[in-house]
Every structure is written in structure tokens, then in C-alpha cells.
Length: 72
Image 1: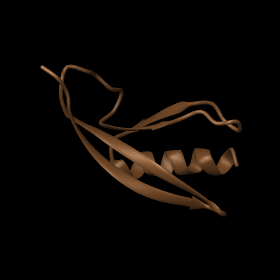
Image 2 (image 1 turned 45 degrees about the vertical axis):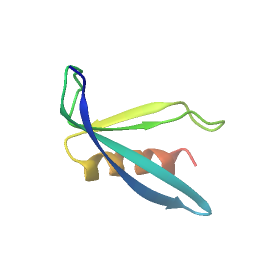
Image 3 (image 1 turned 60 degrees about the vertical axis):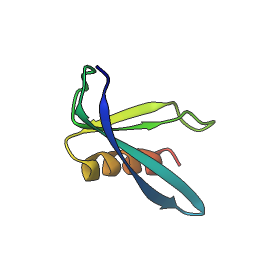
């Protein structure tokens, strides 16, 4: 059996940069996550790759946006 994952996209603008944040919500499956929702941010020349987990899509977007703002 595989995983059932719902995906939503959010656009976060930071100055002139636009980031598309892809929130994944684990509905059911064999894989276990620390929390229900996650965002994976790819590495760039300014920051390391990072994965955020939270209970709701909004919370995980806020965590990722805060991280992106602090590493700008």
C-alpha cells in the first residue's frame, strides 16, 4: 500500500522574489511523519535544504515563510 497525500500550493512574495510553497498533507499511508503537514524547501546558494512539519497547512506555511525571510 502506498501513501495518500493531498497537495496545496501557496505563493510567498519576499521583495522581488516569489516562492511557491508546496504543502503536502499525509492523509493515510505507510510512511510516518512527525506531524500531518510538511513543506520541503530545496537548497540554494543562501540556505540549506530544510523540511518543516506542522499540524495544519497554514502553520507549516508560516514556518517556511519565516525561515525564508530570515535567510534573505
